[in-house]
Amino acid sequence: MEPTEHLKVAAGHAKAAGHVLARTDAAVRNGALAAMADALRDGMPDILAANAADVAAYRGTAALLDRLTLSEARVEAMARGLNDVAALPDPLNRTLGEWTRPNGLRIRRIATPIGVIGMIYESRPNVGADASALCLKSGNAVILRGGSDSENSAQAINAALRRGLAAVGLPQACIQVAPNADRSYVAAMLAGAGLLDLIIPRGGKSLVERVQREARVPVLAHAEGLNHTYIHAAADPAMARAILVNAKMRRTGVCGATETLLIDRDVAGSLLPVLAGDLRALGCDFRADAAARAIVPWLPAADAADFDTEWLDSVLSVAVVDGVDSALAHIAAHGSEHTDAIVTADAAAANRFLTGVNSAVALWNASTQFCDGGEFGFGAEIGIATGHIHARGPVGLEQLTTYRYLVLGSGQVRP
Image (cartoon, rainbow, N blue to C red; front, side):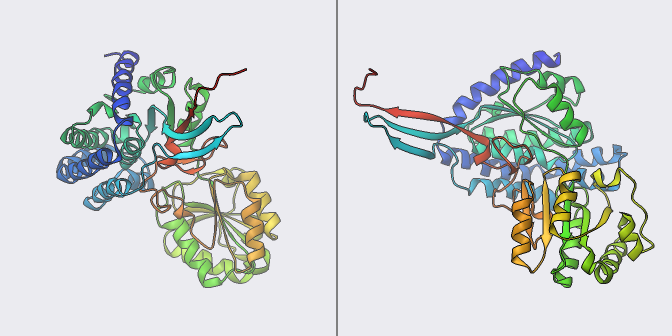
């Protein structure tokens, strides 16, 4: 079936399924999530075989290959994420506000699903499971389109999830996946006004820019993670070393990884050689400004574009700054308003940084890799929103709801 026609049919089924889903009790949705988690575990051999085919065909970088690769532990983590989402409070029908007007009308603002969500993502297969869990719990139907690199994995994961839905009697159309990785299906989704209520892109800069440029459907955007760790003059050296290693090297291909180290000039002379040595021992490469290279001459020189690059690899940009305001100015010039951290024992400096940076997530004395829905207690995430409307930071259950009003009267008429 031609992509536009397929999407029309899929969206029609999704809308009907979403109406059913939105009216279920939380216990029904939680039961479905538990059944889906069991289906992932039962289907692990098929999922790993499909993923092995994707991995064998992959020709990208080692860091992005890590994002694509599944293991028994990672499939189990996906399943556990579904169980975690099931354990969270019901996001639907919450009273967000309530008041009574002078004429006696009682007005309530209540949380309600958004509707049919289109999710476009690239090489991380677990995104499909996380998105499905969050959409189901929040009463939304979802149509997923994964990247060509993970097509086999996406289909196998979706098949397992749909078996879980069937086991509890919910419509399988609550969770659908594009029939293939044809790029024209993305175009159909972007033009899907009236079919989709929201599009969430999760991937590289080019994907997000295309979605924002071409979409005729509201977009919840996820920008690149040009994240900074700023080592303030009052940082504890041991803490700074531990946080930076984790923020950069724990997983270099995730959007919460630190891409730039900023370090105060007052401590750079003593601390930068140690920090650089720690990272070099782990296989990290560098791009450094002149001030950093004057302290550690073996650091490679940065060019004009390096501080605007999301490496998603074992590469770190390094710059020496002169205090909090200098660090904030660098972040404002080069950051993506995703995630930025300060390491310091000075509470006043930390507060100045946290209030001065405009990132969706700002941290004090913690790794930037904590920018994650699971770490925030959301069970999972559908992405990191970096726009300024509706949602920012990890997008979990509450961020996948909107609201409507209930107005209760006693015979009032308007004069």
